[in-house]
Length: 186
Picture 1 (cartoon, one colour):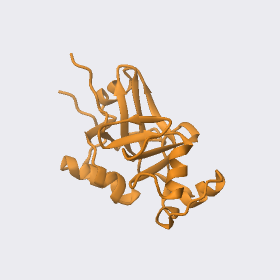
Picture 2: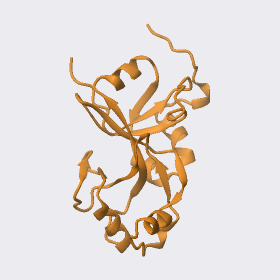
Picture 3: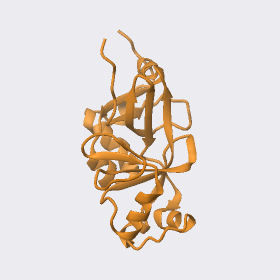
């Protein structure tokens, strides 16, 4: 049986999700392979803007259009570490290439480039990430904890955080409010 690869997919938490970290979350999967999965929650802005983050890490931010962008809670793992989801423009020290259009970078050089106006045009910054051990995500999918759909860059970069979950559901042709909390198996 071929390995399931949900890289560049959204995970939509089902209404019955009891884990408060993931309840009503939209998670973008950056990497999924036989070792496990790595993703970032993309609909949980925190009380921190990019302007404030750049001031805290002492990186100048000369680009006014980025100063008010929210930083997001990306997940419960390494919450003190920044993760930048962005278009593939540029070459950074620590980057996971997701596909030919998107990448995830954890090195400070990308923030310095953004601050100076030479960084990627589209970006979403999180603190922390979500991780799954080998087989864990597949098990959760089998338990009906998540729906999955191919991700949309429009949803990631053009919509405000509060609209992303319903927009991802619309890709499936489903209204979140109509989902049942009961799991069914054939």
